[in-house]
Image (cartoon, rainbow, N blue to C red):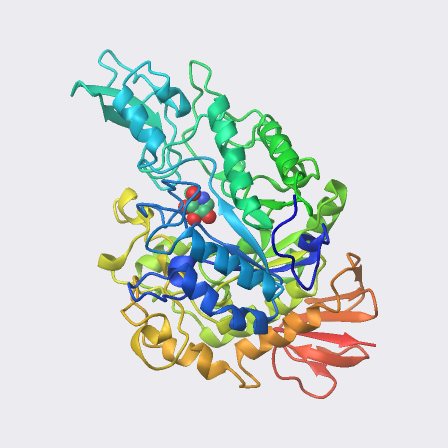
Length: 553
Ligand code: NOJ
């Protein structure tokens, strides 16, 4: 089957995703066309000229499905529809067509580990009671203790608290417990159930038939679980504690790949095959299995989210990930920001190794961000990443140089992490504040009736309209870098140039493209060649501190 519309730049190239620049849209916070304070699909469509001018190859759309929004849409009540607050299926089709007409591919988020507690199958499971077939689609267990009042295991939710919630049976009695690795409104699916498997394949075909080019797979490493009794103890979900033997009770079990082998068959029914990228928080050496061509094909490499602005950390991460991608037949992925982490312009303006939890609780005051350093380093890191082989995943607003909104008032917080940790961790709302499109006007041009998270006054200075056409602006810098990056795409090789000054990374790409980053605090000598772009101002013959430059021969 072929998608109804073909795209200009890649045509039917089955490898379009390998070197793509992918722009993540968090739809509720992107652009609001219907004036209800929530971004929507018509808002996305209206901004396609902006996206095309930015020079991205694909959009990854975070969940836009009907959802009670217990976790920003990652609690899906209907996998095959559009949230009425965000639009209709017809709006989706118009958006997909308009993106394709602009030469932009479309990746959608798919959330297979859990649904919303408002999904009809979960409601059916609650109503049907203990021992029913409907409960088999989720993970229900009796509690421990004489009256079953203790959770079936010590498993914990990623958002804090127990991963089990007790239900009230239709009789009114306290009853069984169900598993939710995230919020209690996000019950985990039972992937041993054939109907669950079949239903997800139906969903993959549903969106593929509508012309979707690929999928971003949420929590891809958690679907297969060892539920054999007695349940094994696992009192922490810290991913660095997950063993690499594929035998953890919850995460990264070897069997999970059987699911993706089936999905691959579905993807390959299409021409070009649909692509997929796994969100799998697994140790680096376990990543290739998710990225294999018989599986999802690509996996996120989140290593840079945890790295300092440091040349040796960057070099180690780059080397390792390129080698792994090659070994698995995938291409690597590069991520500096997304909707789950503190924006990289803020991270780089804070001390190395900082715990962002207490920092957010202090409203971003302890310690304060060094904004100048943060943005200078963010631009240098971005330009480096854009020079690498592999796909670059960019998060909406980073092209405006946005910082984390660290001082959101407690009353405005939406992330379930805030309540589930007893208000000890503020969570991820600070990177999800609706974008500033204009320096003036209601909600900085996001929409005409406010924004669902409060926007700070400093958004006026970062607004897209103010940066448009300004040579030194971060927006124009991204546009220029993404345009030049197209000259590098199609090649996957990188050669390090060794013997450069300490704290400097220098590599060459095919065609004589050089990328050099000075992570240090003193200027270094610039290699020979014509400077095509730099992340900050240059001085004759020298590369200033915390700056990246691309040169061609
Ligand atoms: C990962 C998503 O990126 C995050 O936003 C979400 O809260 C969890 N998965 C649960 O779906």
